[in-house]
Length: 476
Ligand code: AMP
Ligand code: MG
Image (cartoon, rainbow, N blue to C red):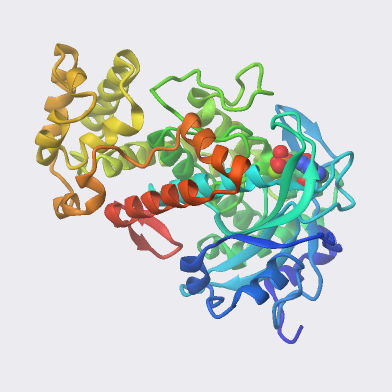
């Protein structure tokens, strides 16, 4: 390696070099051309794509060997000091066209020191599910990790939650850091206070420069505040998109507020606060309606891990931004997905959301269809009248919701002219959609339905035409 990478500041205490698995065959199934462009990797042709993202030959001037990251975390509320990258590693660090540092991290790349009983592998279906969900989230303006390459690897795997044997794959994804709340928890647990301070320095330097301060305890509090903000913003976006993450363990929270590690993800078919995504979440701890609370709980665990560096009272102040960031994001993102400008008066906007979501729950209207039908509000009245669920919009219960919608100014209504909004159905990703996309792949290796869905999602992304501000934050 000829020049230094950010991770080298902290690798000695947060990571271990590991070997990738040696897979019997490699078949490219997905390549994210748009993000390859953003990261300067668009020149790679298929043999190099397979070599770097299937065999993990190092990228030029990058990590000479993959690094498995060490971390701990609360899983379903129980502290687990045995975690760490058990089937993934950090492969490379790279800057995008905005100068943001992105990690290329893997899932399914082989066993590591942290694999415990696991095989270190990912199922092809799991990889396909992640590609769909992450693209959908990105298209809907949610801050998320990006799938980069998916390569089928020719092994047979056994899983409880899939018909087995099932096919294997390795996924590489782009993520604006892989530092988890659990990365801090581990250093606090092991009482490595100096390393904890160095991890704070790393996060501030490369991911939250606005938190910088010459005083270490102030810097720590500022970092916590920045992470609280980013997390609140992310969860507000989830709630407006009807996204159920599924496993909100503290090792699955990134310091940049990027959605990741959402294996059992679901999108709501209809508004239902009790909807639970993971079959193994029997208590519904991570059910849809608990996600905002759970985000706050995870942040509290992070704050506890930072106690060696700042006093409890100041850290409590660092948690404060969460609630407001969440509320603002939920309001802003609901409006953005409806193509509407908020009135700007917090009470009226909150009342609108309450009325809107109460109607969604009571009427059992399709979540994705409702947002699609009413995009840009009053401009969409004729479209809504032709919707498959137009009968719901004619019921009296909808009247106050309709009034609130048409009272709001459409944002950039020219977007309605996009082909995407000329269709009758949105690019939804409900569980039945996903199963029906998987069936032709499983039966006859036919990927055309999945590709058509990705194309439809890409249309949605272009139709919403999110504007970005530095840090790649999407604006309506
Ligand atoms: P996750 O549910 O993906 O966040 O994973 C939780 C922990 O279990 C992490 O330490 C993973 O690396 C590990 N893990 C999950 N599945 C496997 C697997 N098939 N083989 C090895 N480790 C795994
Ligand atoms: Mg995880």
